[in-house]
Image (cartoon, rainbow, N blue to C red):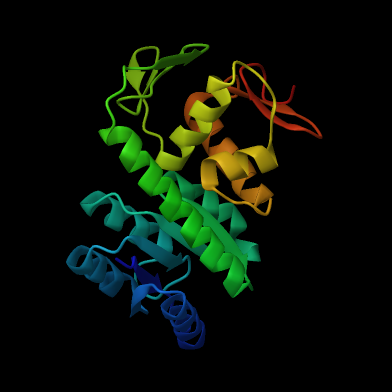
Length: 231
């Protein structure tokens, strides 16, 4: 069964080009050019993934993402102009899984979409498989892997699905340093090593929610669990 993608983009040329490429790759597509219509289409059609432009008429991409996620957990890949990249921290915080800056390669877009869908499918299988509860800790933060729950001083903190997977990867390696390319492959499924900014953006978002002492930066290498942010 082919995956169904909702493309939300107000530039009709870009929207049609993306939709045509996705259809040629075996996906089915809906296209929306406006925020409210995108939310309604997502609710009605239950897409497997949404390709979502950040700047839209009516509701912007961040609000669209927030509303889509409030109805149903749906993978979102956001598109943004390079000057809008700081806004992606907000987008990641409301549930976006990944982002790409314009102009972008259609080939890379398809690769990113397939990587997200593979990760979602893997999570679904892991959730349905019978496995004992697994608890991980870093400082005062506790991760219940089975329940996908994060507690800081016994208070629940909400992370996006990707943020949770990234943190579990780092904490699960007992403080070992993980390179960006390793994280991109193991968390996002990127095989070509592209997307360093994606890793950095998610790390910043996790630190905003959990504090700087949860993940440390090892300059020139990557990231590890625990320690100060600028170690």
